[in-house]
Image (tube, one colour):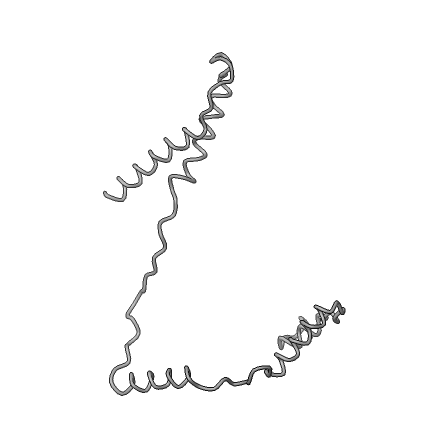
Length: 137
């Protein structure tokens, strides 16, 4: 019941606001307000209602089912030590170094910045890189 009351109030407020936004007085006299102009203003106001009246509610997350079990005792201590070790561990690569894939990507970035044209990958290259086969082969 509360939800319906809130929706009705929202709809009425949106209707009032949208009609107010769509209203413009005639330029010289009321005789210029033809039936077509009145209907066009009412139609524009009605179109404004769904956008203003049915604004989405704030996002909320729901968890369905049982939450995962929390670590307790010794398991909690091990997980905490593992996280701390990871936090203070030495990086895998020193500054200025990196994996072969990183070095290759860095070279490509430098080549593009220098204006060099890079070879375009073919469909066969993409299929081989992704480990896929062409249909029918």
